[in-house]
Amino acid sequence: MKDKETIFSGMRPTGRMHIGHYFGALKNWVELQEKYHCIFGITDWHALTTSFEDTTQLEDNIMEMAADWLAVGIDPEKCILILQSWVPEHAELHLLFSMITPVGWLERNPVLKEQLQDMGLKEAVGYGHLGYPVLMASDILIYKATKVPVGEDQVPHIELTREIARRFNYLYGEVFPEPQALLTEVPRILGIDGRKMSKSLNNYVGLSEPPEEVRRKILSMFTDPEKIRLSDPGHPEQCNVFSFHRLLANPRLLDIEKDCRGGKWGCVSCKEELSELMIDYLEKIVPYREKYRGKKHLVKEILWEGSKKARQLAQATLEEAKGAMKLNYDGFKS
Ligand code: AMP
Ligand code: TRP
Image (cartoon, rainbow, N blue to C red):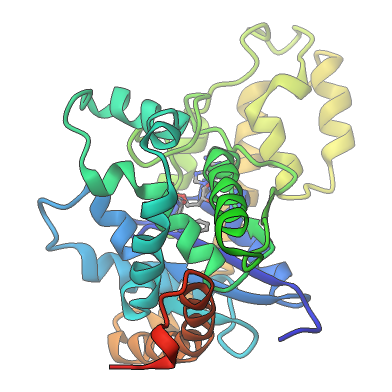
């Protein structure tokens, strides 16, 4: 494991995946597994921090998420896939980190503040929810990962991970690296209404959405507000539809840009062309998805085998951390 750097990233199994997840993070993972030791986790405990009341969908969500990952090219031969709760060492390291993390750091977390506002939860933040970034730090640091490929919204969490690593190393000696976030070229994918694409805002295009839905959603996308008529000069650099043409590597990109600016290309045609491109792009995933859909046993087997491998790595780091904290009590094991 010494020759290449280690990467960790995860996603919460809170529902079906959308193209924001894909273009903002997952597509990057597929490329990274060729060059790094990658460990990717379905973080079911993180899902519980906000959705603990009704857990009936959790297992299905995990299975759907794993099927999506495998369908887009995450390859268990090239990386390690885990289910977080099947690697309980994450929880033990989280407990140790919780001792050295001041509550003030967690209360200042801008991601938490935004979530509380969105959920109208001001006073009722749970203990586990407050500690969300501490659990994330243990996910990452238990593998001594140095890079974390995520969307822009996760960057404050990675910064906290670095602070926790720094604090641990200062208190007990150098054990953990200080990992960096790895962003894609478009770290913040916007939804059909121009706000960040997210499930809770219902402004997303799903990764396995039927073609007619993809078309309907793309045709309702916001475009450049200054371009009302076809002949108005457009501003592609500010238009979300144009950014998707770029993401999908439309070979006509330069023509679209020129004709939009020149008032020779209208937004409706632009969206129609995009919806065809997107449908083709997503349809390539479908056959792979079918291979895993409904095959819970196969998917669980992949996650179980990956979690087993990960546990060996996690146990080694945990021992080292406990040793540094003088918690190994002369190597006596119960
Ligand atoms: P979440 O659904 O919040 O657990 O997100 C899983 C991963 O996808 C994280 O790395 C997010 O940063 C990324 N992600 C989710 N939505 C978007 C978006 N609209 N743009 C870019 N990345 C995103
Ligand atoms: N918080 C991440 C998200 O919502 C998911 C996650 C959990 C994660 N643990 C992680 C991401 C560790 C990167 C590294 O997307």
